[in-house]
Picture (cartoon, rainbow, N blue to C red):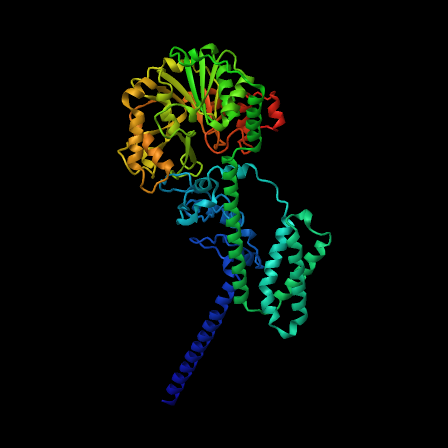
Length: 616
């Protein structure tokens, strides 16, 4: 019994030893496995179903690159697996314009499909409101970004200013000044925390001294050329002080609050300067240049000084058998270019009669200009609209009204839909034409921002099928997309018609009472809180609804006053070029590649142009 008991006791001891060894092995493995993962040893094992993709975060890339374990022997295997599964991996891309380079992911071939947005059209001269669009990524999740950060949607808010700003961007001349401001911001953020440390009184004095020196320099310096010669030493001192301040434990909340305050102030300042620059741009494009004002004054003085005698042929002006053009303008050079280009390309200019409607302020200057610069055999009549004997009480000159229409549509920011358009419509003065030219049956109206490249005589041979207004239609914008159209029954799919080149059947106009219909609609829609321009737009569209004859698109191409991307061949094939938009060719802000078409028809030999420094 004792022997049997000894055998049993020996087996129990052995089992106990085995259990102890097993527990020790498990404890050691439980310590080694986490340690192996921390050291990255798991990357050396092949996994049949999981591939470790290089992280897109710069912080993660730097952490992995810091490990001492090389993965050169696995590169080929990883590349092969990546090529197989690459189409299904999510690719995160940042399309924010200003920070595209900073947030670029490690997957270099990542592409964005576009910005699908809902249509939003604003027919209002004022800038559109801010909009946000949803971004669709290939294989990834959508993200919300600010649409104003792209050039295309910038046009929605600021119009042609964005195009002009990109075209006239100048090299940075204040890089050092901006670096000084950045260092000054950081020093101000750390200074309150350092000043609370009694043991760092010397550092506090040094920081305060450097901050004051930077402030004194920045008060008198706006560009790098304005900086003093010893500015590099100031940079070194400030950077050394900031580096020393960062080495001390400071209250991060105070630094964070200070930097946030500075960021808010900087954003407010940037927004203010953007709005100010847009305002100055709008002021520049809507104000008569000093040189053109000088030209008008000099010609007016010359008219009375020389005692010019009118040699107008009144019989031609009322002869319905001739070809009559009407130009409504207060710009001498613009009217001259329209007439010169029309006569230059005419087969027989002796049958052409031009009627220029202008204001009383520019009447004598306009007459003197065409006395000094006759146009071959064509007859030119200058009329003062304010002195005409008309029943209408509104006899002030009003030029064609331009509406900036902006909308987003389609899946690509570069698509034609995601652009800003300028639509030209008739003004109040156009509805006086049937009474002013009561003896004429048909006229062609040319806006003063038009250049003619073909003979326009065939326009009088058109069969307009009983329509009143022959115009080129703008079908990139439909009536249903205009948010300002609130009253009246409009065809949502109808195209908008444009002024610029218009064939007007005056006889049919009088028969249908278009002028009376326009004034009726205008009175009905007034008083609803809308601007005068919006009411006039709706009244014009209603008055000419179903009365517009669509001209061939080759008769006129528009957009030369705001669109940088018009096809060259399209411009060459067009009969007329319409510079609708803010960037008129007689302004310094005009689009450079389109200015030559306008300059070629300007008489630059006139001495008044050189005296007034007129150099479009």
